[in-house]
Length: 243
Image 1 (cartoon, rainbow, N blue to C red):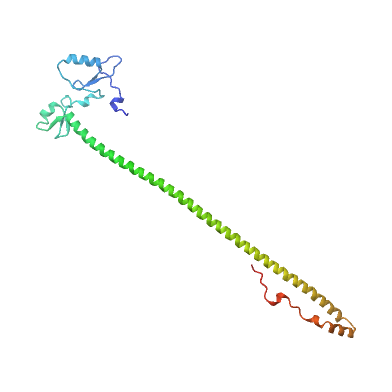
Image 2 (tube, one colour):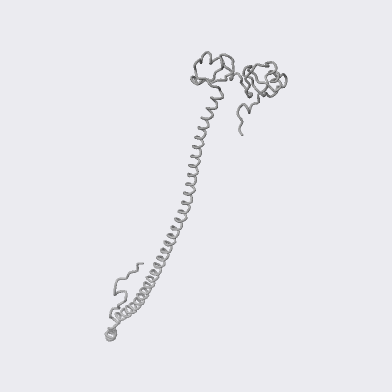
């Protein structure tokens, strides 16, 4: 529990010489704080005089009227100020005067009402904090769920794209192989035709230099069917080797 300033600071006896003892009361009329022993002496000396004793305080003068030096034991409702008995007879005559206890009690009641209002305000804000925290937690859960779902969707999409890409590349690869095979077949056919044409050309070259006219004519006539042009498959239409 947090202590007030008076409780935290030890009030010492004004009348103790040497080691001062802890004060047990403060006398407002005398303006001093006294330990148990000196308080007993104080009461014996005063006898029938009634002084105002309060719990020990550091500055007793604050509890005395600055004008008359008497205890501030009353409260003026009109001027809203603490007063002593002499003040009520001089400066506050015909004013509404009540005891400090009654004024303090009324103020405590009002403070209690204010405190209740403050407690309600505190509770209201605590509930708002709880609502905000729950909202943040709910948002966090939703974000986690949405993130998981988004990752799942995009993972599936990426997988689908990669699969489609792999299938497309495979189709293109097979098509390229087919084109290559077709091209190789055409090249082979053309090379064979070139060999045939070269052989024809060599025979023609040989006959063109022959001086045996009869032999030349006979050989030429016997090879007339060889003069028919070759018709390769690639000549029947345009070749296309694109993928």
